[in-house]
Length: 386
Image (cartoon, rainbow, N blue to C red; front, side, top):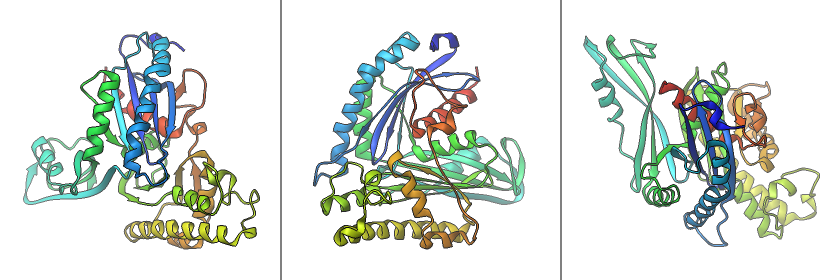
């Protein structure tokens, strides 16, 4: 597929997707009113050495990813777009290097007032400062309620009460500096856009499933697990826990199982390995599962105390652990939070769900995380108009 066929009013974008499991990269082609086209994609595992902190493994993994994009990726981009240099560079991050929260800001006066750009700006800037070591990345107004009704275009309206729902995202300062420097050098550009992956995923899922108004997304990495809760089409909660499937992998390695992806061929796939033959092995795995489940339950319990949890749960994870995670969602300690005997609709995200909304120039499969970022990028581009 030749991107040049899209015409002059088109754009190429370099995507960098940084998670606690790996760093992905892709080149996109965007044209108004058309599905985004993935021209190239690759991913490099984030694999710290035995006692190495995750932060120290990040620079070399990013360097390896950028090398691939500057060599084989640039060849693919040039073949489709006629140039090996993208128009834009976009970086998304998940925890532990990015944190986010949803806030509600209420403005209420005795006399009617005009909702202006100044009112909107003042409200979005009144959010609390991020914790030490983090810098504010964005304050995104998710929705505006005027006199109790959601209004898409609130500017100029006369109201007594306005409520804004704001998603605040912050990034670890030293990681921001490191990534920005490396990406600027690799793409020979001074401008790099950053965003929280979960806010991008929310935008992508809303576009992919426009009639799904209530859902949860659970994004499980090696070291962290992120969740978002959407009610009535509105993102109402974002949370993160410092536990992931990497703990279970390390527990398995600690008792003599050497597999780079334990969940695919170890105890997490029933019938492949009989954990009953090794009491120590089973005990270590059970302890790691229990610790992860306990913290996840605590996080979900907070959300459930505020809003009933939706029965539709999207799972975003490495392919090798998806079935394992679906099984964990049926654990009694979690199922009771949904206050229903009906089965959950746990939907692992794969590239199959995106085939009608995202195209691949080479016809090859692509990671669902890249597809979500592509949909979000396309939505932003379309909103900018022609």
